[in-house]
Length: 99
Image (cartoon, rainbow, N blue to C red; front, top):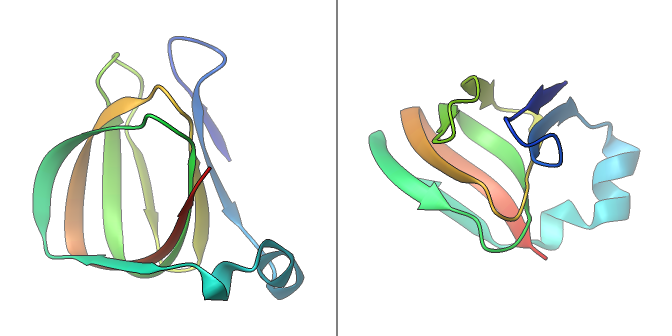
């Protein structure tokens, strides 16, 4: 699933990746980040790919794009240049990589 933002070159991509894709990306060697239930602004200077291990999150783009929700098992790509607000609804644990 892809969620387009106002600028068609920016979108949050959410997919259910199979084990083969996760291994090819080396996901399980990426660092892990955890965060309690909270709401905070965030801006991406570079692309981030995250594999969600636990939790439930809604991210709302600041440019007026639609909010997107994701959780455990989702592989999410955030584009460089995105400014958004994170709403962590259930404690988050994710593997992540910035490029």
